[in-house]
Structure formats: structure tokens, C-alpha cells
Length: 381
Image (tube, rainbow, N blue to C red):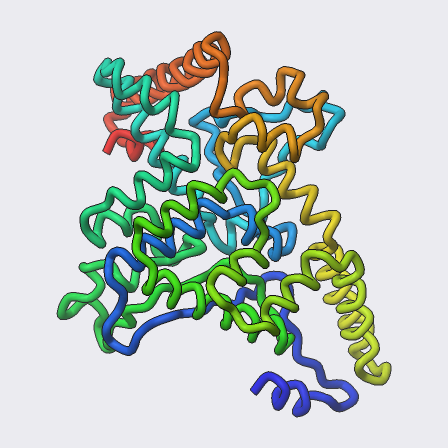
């Protein structure tokens, strides 16, 4: 179909484009059967634990993060840092929201409720364990119903969108004029007209879904426990795990390991048709894609996301392998480890406590002056 579309516009003065605002959303389903809770947990677990692996095939602007400044992340890079540029809010949030976002929102909610109730035990547990992937995986696999699990996915926004499996959307009258889809929607991939990219993504997601359906939650959580902090694991390893097609494995190997992949794509896209009136537009669109998909730019963005704490906290062994030593030895990386010394943990807890206090003070001030809800109220649901 894509090739037919391209051929239909393969004439002087005609083009078909997929620019940076276009996304490739894929619905995976089993006719009208939907997916059971364990299968859905496994899928959510994979995308939550290995978010950085999926980020590696996204354009720079689609590597989204938790952007809420009401809750302190493990480490926020200061403007004076020379090791790496400070985090700049991503345009990706306009397209899709990674799974870590909902986990940080859940953590903020837990911290605020515990602080508001002066529950020292809950506050301590949230601070000590809440910003780490093992706790996020625990949240997912502890869900007893599909409705609970759907709370970790923003409807029509999260990269793994569960709204079509939510019980309220599959009841009579839930979808006026149409039948429920009962699918899982994957929203993270950028738009593309490249048949190889499209087929590889479809194959990977379908194979991953089948694997998650045929694998027990015990087996998959055991695998996640060994891989979430493995600095060497990539999307190619995930593709092999789920028995993806050889062509899919070759494609992602090329994307991740060929430095000139983005440049080669650009050259092919800009020379496949004879020059005409739309050549400047073609060059502009493809130049933007090139700047967004070059391997060095993507790697730098992933490193920025890691340093800013937006992948959560990691063991020292992982951090020492992937981050510059001078950064870990300085103040910027002091909260990135989930193995902090007691003194660091106390400082981390103090920052969170102070942020919680300020948020509660703001809510009370606005409530008393205006008698209206504020944007902070959703932290106290």
C-alpha cells in the first residue's frame, strides 16, 4: 500500500511526506477477545523497565519525559554543569507520554498523601524505593484488576495506551456508534513511509505481544529483574527474546549500530526522484528528520534523560558504566543511585519533604483565598 502510494505520487510536482508531527500508532488485538490481565502486565512491564531501549529508535524530540516540577527528580542538572547540557523540555510530550511519566506521577501522589497524613512509614518507603524501576514493576504486577492496571496508562496519551481495554470502555454504550476495539495501542513510533521501518515495528510489537501472552508473569519478571539495570541490553536483544523475524533483527541492528544509517536514509530520500518544484520542500523535511535521527543526537538525549533522573534511579555499577566519572563524583549525580549512603538518602528525603510542604502550603493558600481547586489537587486524590 505504501509503495502504491509513493508510485502514485512519483511524478514531477507530486510528493507524499511524513513529517515530524506524524506518528505511527499501532493497535494490536485478538479479534474481539482482548487481552487478559497477565498478558497486559507483561507488556507494560517490558515498556516500563526498558524504556531507554525503545527510546533509542525514536527521534530526539519524541524522547519524552516527566516534566512536572512539583516533584523533585533524583537529580536535575544545573546550568553550570560542563559534563553535559542541562535538560531541555521535550516536544515529545505533545505526541506521546512514556511509561515512566505515570510512575513519577504515582510517586508524587504517594509522597504527598503520606506527608499530608504525617505517615512516616509510607513517606520513608516512597522516598527510599519509589523512584526506581523495581518498584515501578512491583506496582504493575501488583494490580489485581484491569482497571487498576489502566491507571498506569494515560488514555490516548501514554506510549502503551490501555484505554481500549479499560472496563468502562468495553461496557454496553461505552463506544457510541461503534464496537469496542479491545486492543493495546502503541503510540511511541514516529511517522514514516519507509516500508522496512513499518514492517519491522509491526513485527516487533506483534511478536512481543505473543511472547507476553505465552510467558508467565513469574518468568518475565525474573527476566526483567536481570535486565533492567543491564547497560548492554538493547532493542535487538528484546527482538531476539520475542523471536522477531530475522529481517526485524537486521533492521534494528542497522539502526542502532550503523553510524551512517540516518545519513544514508537522507541520501536515498532526497535522490530517489528527479529535481522538481518540490525538491526544496523534500530536502527541508528530510533534513529535519536527519537532525532528529542521527545516532549521536539520540544517544546524547538518552544520556540527558538518564542524568536528569527521568529513567529513575539505578545501581552504582550501571551508572559507573554509562556516565562520566566526573559527573558521578560531583553534586549533580548525587541522587541518581538507588544505593545511596544514609547521608545522601537523608538529603534526598529532605528535598522531597520540602517540596511536599511547599505544594501543600500552596494548595491551602489558594483554597482559603479563592475557594477553588488548583492544579495540585490531583496529587491528593
